[in-house]
Length: 313
Image 1 (cartoon, rainbow, N blue to C red):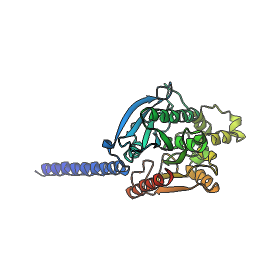
Image 2 (image 1 turned 180 degrees about the vertical axis):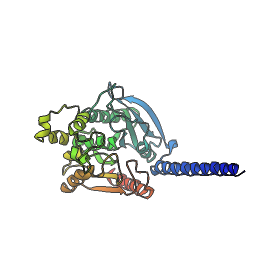
Image 3 (image 1 turned 45 degrees about the horizontal axis):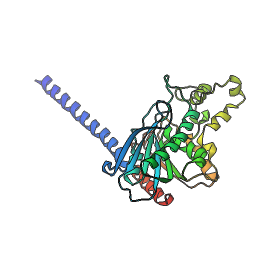
Image 4 (image 1 turned 120 degrees about the vertical axis):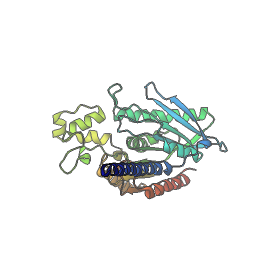
């Protein structure tokens, strides 16, 4: 009888723990998904438009149903995935922008895989090409664009920053600001190393770290004489910040175990030194996914609304 009772109690405990765990994770996911606005009835989506010959050279175009404008602001969103995965369908920022009445796009790019090798330079070029195609397609669909912002998360945040700080001057329409979440702004190997000098997944092999990101095969001499720093600088968004850079909104997780928190220190210094306006949100309890600070998430999205109101005409 006691065994039966203990068995029932054990099952009860397992069920309760499972229910609490499911509730906890669902609540976290729901909080994250509710952070950005999304009203699917307020926009339509044109899927899988191409901007190049690559398998992943495509984007989805989000078009607001309210066409009571002569011209539309555009928001281009770029997915994350460590430069090796991810997809344009995870487009909360693009849906948020379309819900607000803006044209938006979620862009794919060639991630680095065995079947389709890629590198940062190739991705940067593809994003630049995609923006031109997005503006042209928006016009073809009856939505002339006269200004834009660019955004992304994680790897997509890096690509958004590089476009904003290096390529934005060549944008087909004026770029007004950039916003991004947890995007690496530096690829100096030392910025990725822990106190023991180890880079997660690479140990002390700084050469392999840079080679996989850039596709450039560095020599031992490059590493010994420090010239690898020039390559790391060339592919790092912080290097391109200038006094003419557009304003920036960003968010980072204090407990990020994927992108070390210090990786954006050079970015903050560059913005300060060049007197570029920016807003910087730290999520103190969150890791890379920014899941654990719903209050900060709301403040971040509220500030994004301020940016739209301030920088879009």
